[in-house]
Length: 315
Image (cartoon, rainbow, N blue to C red; front, side, top):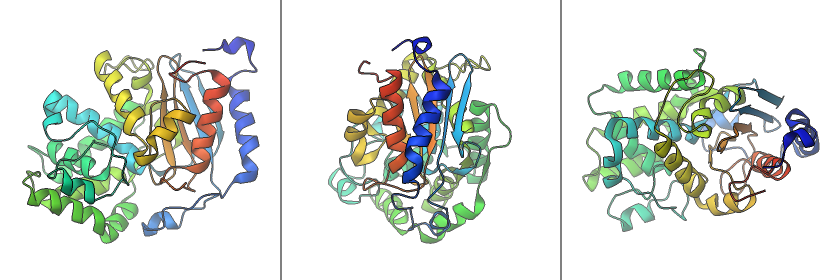
């Protein structure tokens, strides 16, 4: 890492990135296949960085809540590992998909076992795993409490309008769940599993809240702001590895090439990224690129990694 004292300072770097990308606000395409997300103004852009020392730096719409969508899969994976340990890997793989996030073709070819926990089928399977011993309502409450615990913020809620919108139009996810059930790969009723899945994807968070919630992954499994131990150092490293290789669907390789940080995107336009040992970062811009990842968010993270030297592959 380059010595930040010899640079303009992290806030100045973020401000510069925001200013340079402002002329491009509105680029990309919002996720219009989810009616509630189609209503979001594509010109939003926010960015927040929380360092392992506890400093918070923000720019733009960093305090505007948005639907985090698939970023929530990082949190449900963490819960699943806590409940079931390494046994989860007999139910879901750890390999990049190379296919669209909602692909049915790969799932059929591989006998109903999802390729990784971050594609839709994999996250549906994770929802099924953590549903054991719970009603859907109980588990949804547990997920919300867990994310509030990670962010140290009781104001985080589920956007129920988004959840209802997804449930009403999520035909591909319904097909994926039924397809896995046909292979005997789901243990609970499809409607229960999907109820959990749609609701955790509908978590609404700001960039600042999201950056704080990922800080345990930047600090070896412990939240340095609260002292709470979330996962072991080894588990934090492995979750980061999966984010790096699988966190952006079939655009994961390109994101690793350009940014060089573990990250997880969501079709709401958010990205949570981790600079191990340094900081947790969240960006939000609703316009998506061809891979379904935030166009300006990806650019902002590429610029941040270049100007701080935070890439895991070296400065």
